[in-house]
Image (cartoon, rainbow, N blue to C red; front, side, top):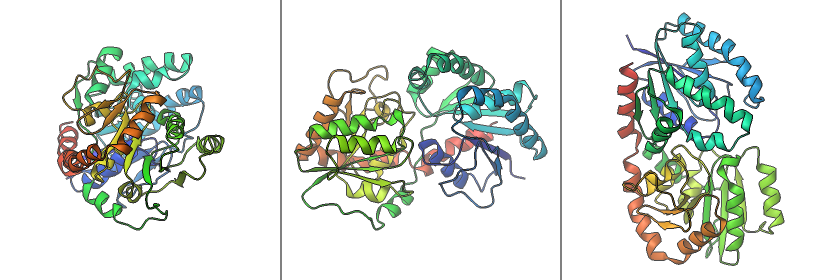
Length: 387
C-alpha cells in the first residue's frame, strides 16, 4: 500500500511555489497516494487527474485579522479530512498553510508528521509589511516551525534566516526548487504570438505583478537606457497591472514595453529574448532564474534575499550582498536591491558586452541541469518517506 501524503498550499495560481507543487504532484504520484488541499481552488498548473482536491473555499485577499481569526476553524476542518482519509503526513507550503498545520497538531492533536516548506526569506518579506502585521506574523512563524517534524527550505540563506532571526530549532533540510528541463525545452520551441523585432535587443521579465517583484524599478531602469535599440517584454499578471501600465505611459515607453499577459508557457518568450532580468527585493529561490538558465539566457538579478546569490555566484559568502555597484558573477550579473542606476548600468553592460553574454549563454544550461526535477525529486522523496 502506498503511503498517504497531503500537500497543502494557498492555490495553484501562477507562482514559483505553485509550480514546484505541480512538479511534485506529477513526480511523486507513482509512489504516494497524494491528496491536495487548497486554501482556495484556483488552479493554473496541470495536475494529475487522480489526485483528490480538498478546497477550503477561502478568499486569498482577506485582511490579515480575518485570516488569523479563521485559522483554528480551518485547522479543525483539515484535521478532520486527514482523519477521515487516514493521512499521516501533511506537507505545507507558504505561511497560511503552515499556521493551519501547526494548530492542527496543537489544538486537534494530529498525531502524524507535519512538514513545512519555507519558500521565502521571512525577515525581508515581513519587514516590508505594517508594524501590526509584522508583530503578529513573526511569533506565528516561530510557533509554527516549532511544531513541525521537519522544515524544508529552498535556500541556505533562508535556513540561516530561520535559525538566526526566528530561533527555529526544528530539524531543517535545504532542497532547491526543481525545474523540468524536458518540458521547458518542448515549450520553449512552441510558436510565439508576439513579434521579436530584428535589430532590437530584447530584455524580458516573468512573474506576478506584486510589489515584491519590484517591476516599477525595472521600468525606471529601462527608461534610462531607452535610447538604445532595446525592448522590454513583461510576462505575467496581477494586482499591479494598471499601475504598471500607467507607469509605462508616464515614461513614454508604450512602443518599447510589451505586456503579454499571463501565459502558462513563458519559455517561448524567454527563449527568443536576449537577456532575462529579475528586479525583486525579496525571493525564496526564484524559479524564473532557473528557467531562464534552462533557456540558455544571460541573467541580471538583484542580489536580494534569498536565492539569486546561491544560484548565480555559488561558493561566495551568503552574508555578502552587492550594495554599491553591480557584480559580474559566475553565472549572471547581481545588482544592489532597489538601485535603479546600477540596474540600468548592468542592462547597458549586458547589451554592449557580447563576449560576456556569450560566456553566460555557454554556461547557462549546464548550471540549470543541476536543478532538474530528475535530480531534485529524490531528496523530496526521502524527506517525505522518512516521516
